[in-house]
Image 1: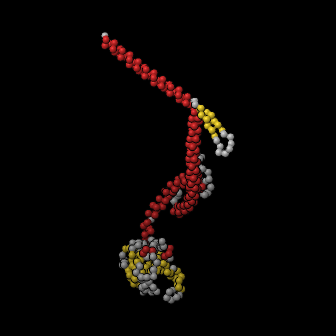
Image 2: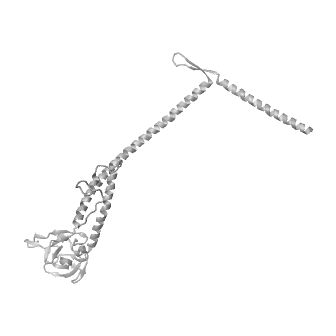
Image 3: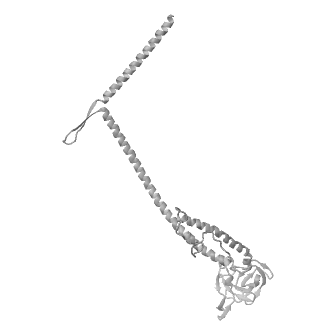
Length: 337
């Protein structure tokens, strides 16, 4: 029983001590708050004294109003600095965007110029392609809208109106040009197939420069000329090619069979090749001959070298083209390129 009383007495003492401590703390806190507000309520006097003689301006206030004024001043100043910095940053951003806009406009102008150049090139391409297709008998199918005038398949490319509202004219032009070029692929492929099918014809008809690597020049044309030895007018029945030296390789200008390869009093060492379609070619004044009679030769095969044999005033190649019994101008059958 005595032990229970001791516990209750101890408990009462502890509660009393805690309550006393809490009361002391709250009293101290309250006194501190009262002192703080009293401090804020204390009056202060601010005097503005001019350097020169003048009226002294006195401002009386309390500490709370003074501190509040300082906070408001600092807040306004900080806001001004912040928004001023934002304004400067915005101005710089606007300046950068204006510069980019000018550069973009310059690029757009350049793009428009290039687009105009492209359309002009397309006009020339369309005209050349149409002429080539007409010569070859190939009909070109139009892939762009039918023109209102007589300007050809590409006239719709040069219409000043936009296809769709809000779209750039250059964009619509490029789209129509792309559509036209896609349609032009088929006739160009037909030309390629035609050339491929006729490749054999090109190798059977004399049509290349008779000197290897396309060197040399024409020293005497076909037709009426003054003979270099007799100095009389006569009909020159071929083309004379000169490289100013002997030994340059001479080529067969088409596939065929050698029907003559011997020395001639007039033509010196000369070769005659028979080709298809009743055509013959003669190569005269050769220094050496590398083929024999009856031999089959192919186009661009080396058959001899330039010389000055026979009746000649210097090293050159005399080249003739015959169709049946007629002599024709070889220039019509020589691809100078």
